[in-house]
Length: 79
Image (tube, rainbow, N blue to C red):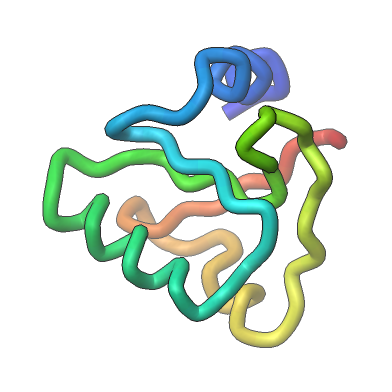
């Protein structure tokens, strides 16, 4: 996903296949499972509900997801 695609996705807002999360929390696993049990989706970490990009630093367990497989893929946007 490039920056233009990311900006468009954020501009369209949350829906059935897009979820914004301001920060990482253990409850994020529930959202990932919900996407897995449906048609899939995109979870954007570091984006507030008002569509503001605030970023989130990847530390500890979050680094394990970075560069993962097709089921859990992360990409960094040029913010």
